[in-house]
Length: 306
Image 1: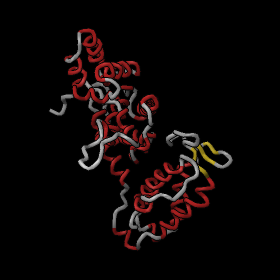
Image 2: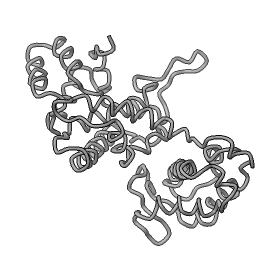
Image 3: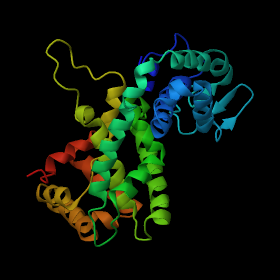
């Protein structure tokens, strides 16, 4: 094993609470990022237990501490113990096991770069989303790095660990989507510009999620040797919202009947970058009316690729 990601690739045989495997995921990425900032050789030159303890504490210190557990609001919350980690399991089993694996990293590990797969996915998705969201220059523009930082400081960051972090129903996804947009909006208003809007926040969120889960957003890829039953975590990617822009809205209006066309035209006049929460909700409602539950199907109307 030569990297942090490799020692976290296989989980233990048993967990405590439902939040434990998600924290395992997050801790692997957090420890990888902190190691990369210092120097990978730090794992062989310094005390790996200190690096591990510091990374673990940074993730749980702000949680809701209870008698035998900590509730972390940024973890998926499904199930009776969703969002909870079991402290005894971590102290007695998981942290000692991770520490043992850290000590087993080969001596030549310092000659390779520490680069977690989730970090790789995050960087591309954040770049793509920030590039798209900053394009409304007459309303509010910002450096790509600023948009990426908004995402990194939000709970959306952890979705780069995989689709198993997504909500498991459309209703739960829609509620989470609004929370994500509101969090991005608040930080954007305070750290980027008073002109930052809900529409820009939604564009950032939607393009980020599209880049992360493009492969399964419209259905599973063709597999000649297996049935394409949409089971498991990847089904959740079907709940994603489409990025809304003028190009999509104009084509959707062109394909609509006279009544729906008027509703699209009203939104076009407002402009996606000036959307309030209500305007964005109207746009998504129109998408649902045109294509049904799988709202991302409306991207058939996006001609920006041409």
